[in-house]
Image (cartoon, rainbow, N blue to C red):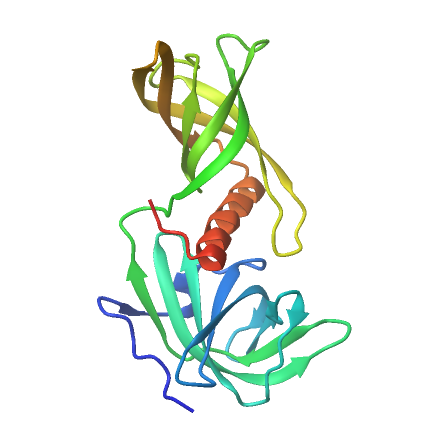
Length: 235
């Protein structure tokens, strides 16, 4: 069995609380069963500080993977504007009915800071309602998304810079989870008007404000899950 990965360059030591983990956070599992590393997606269930962590048993093509007691794994997690990594090992594999892994509690973590919240490319339909015309809604598209804002593509003006609008969209389901309806207030930060083939279009940068904690968590998990699952580039 190969040795575990060394700490990432430009990473700093961190403690567990600094990762700001919550139940439901997406995790990336890295196993070392051969010379080629294998990566899988899991979900954090909970933990007892200093004792253990519980995570969902990773799946491949819908089938729960097998792990053995004592197996070494590395875990990678996106937390706010940082990427955190730590090494752990399997204490116990729990199959039916829980299908989870009990892991040793991490004793050391590494954290690499990002310049800003991760933003991913998306193609999601959305509805925008302006506070100035609350009875009128506009059908738009989200071109990219982060936990703190979105880039909106539209063929009609949806407001002025610094105006607050309401953005509603549905996050697609993946990893066995249900689709989620998100509704957030967003402030228009910038707007670029384009003219192509006599058709005007607008690219509108927005920042989410007055965010519901649950909605923000769902958006953040969707963004992180997309990066982990599809190896999507951060934009």
